[in-house]
Image (cartoon, one colour):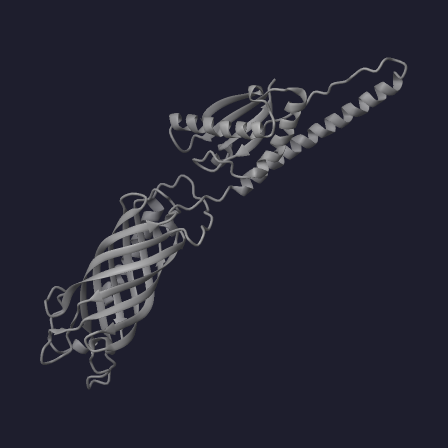
Amino acid sequence: MKKLFIALIFACFSMGAVAQNEDITEKYSVATNSFWSNWFIHGGVTWEVWYGNYEDGRGYTKNPFKAFRSNPGGAIAIGKWFTPGLGLRTKLQGIWGKSVWNDKNIETENKYWMLNEQVLFNLSNLFCGYNEDRVWNFIPFVGAGLARSCTYNRYAMGLSVGILNEFWVNKRLAINFEVGWNRYESDICGMPAEMGSGIMNHPNHVYAEVGVTYNLGKRRWNKVPDVDAIKALSQSQIDALNAQLADEKAENERLKNELANKKAEPTVKVEKEYVTTPVSVFFNIDKDKIASKKDLVNVKNLADYSKDNNAKLVVTGYADSATGNADYNRDLSQRRAERVAEELVNMGVKRENIKIEAKGGVDTLVPPSYNRRATVEISK
């Protein structure tokens, strides 16, 4: 058992090293999905071994492949990920077993099942950040449960710990390799609680499993919009609008004074020029769906101006050059611009008054998420 603990500790430190060396271009938070998302089912075949402290001094070999102590078995499980790093599963395993406590016959059949509730920790996501395209996930787990010996018609409580490795073949299917350890009360093997030594007997169950995982429902996690970045850019737009309003107020005062001094002159219609800075609409990474409908509030002002004055608008799409190649970013920026143009048409702007431009991937703004946008402005 000491060797098992040493192996678990070594594996955890190894994952820490991998986490520090992995090339992460941008870490970000994810939104909690609905209850019906991120469910999965496991199924696998196992090689299961029983041993315990009641074997001490009896000269039994500890070899897990000896016929008197090991047998193949099976396992199924169902579970759910509540975050990219934390999940729960209910696992049922067992069928055939060999108890080794009987002095008269160390190869004693013991059919059984064990049902455990386990907490899963995806260290790949916890240490390295969520990556929906990651192939290998390293997942230690701990839990507790109930087991029953069908041979002896007895029940026992126990604890479990282990490591699950998932290797994803596609977005739905993964190949699993799992090793684990369960520690139960003596009832699971049908033995006495004590065998004359005064020490309580605790059977240990070690297994290795190969199987598959299949994801049910939605698997990916949505990125949380970069609220701070959006707020910062929105504030700069507000400052620009305030400055514009101040200029217009001054212009109104000038016109008011001019009209007061020329009461006798014919009334002259004064048309004011609408001075504007580009209004930004933001998108999540690799998406052409508008991240927040609040961005369309300022766009509505431009749409109203265009309708009232038959003015032409320019919609320019961008992507961040830190992700994706040039051709893909050009297409993505085009789709983002077209999405904003559709919103303008829905607001009543004539389609022929909208010009679309796609700039592709750029790095003009920092952080990179600022560049995932489309801008709207009045054509000069």
